[in-house]
Image (cartoon, rainbow, N blue to C red):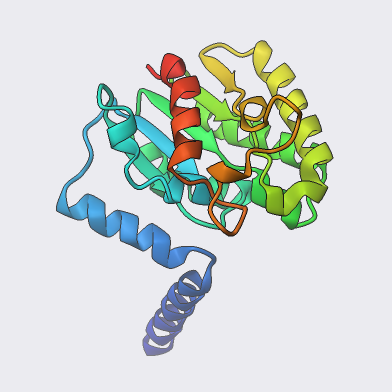
Length: 215
């Protein structure tokens, strides 16, 4: 009996240690800590995805008529959002889930079809938990520092938009096209110096496009 107890203790310790080494473990624990202090209201709008949302720290100011829960965690790709769905999506019982993710997948050598299939998998997972929740997916943005991926991003955006046309309670939000000048060049002044993350000018463009889609 003593051996069994020791074995179970070892397995529990090993599992917890491995969990701590998992990507973005600390980010997820920080969300849980914040929730333990004050849990967000139900039927809010949940923003989930990568650093484009993480860095939008004043997102609530952009949408004062809505209650926004921001659970973006920087550097994440679609598999990470899928893996942490039980922690960062399902507990909130949101009336709408707004997703920005997929850009980092391309830097991890994902193909266009990989990204599209991952988006579908995330949608299916959300729908299995809540068949009626509204889902909005924001187009993958054309970051200047990732210009070599633009052709794949354009193709993925097109395929995801087509996929979503037949879905109920789901909208594709195209912010991609609005980030270019009239001559076809990218608006570099809407990005930070890293030419990857947006500044307030970029978020202001997104706000105008997104607001009509928010429930």
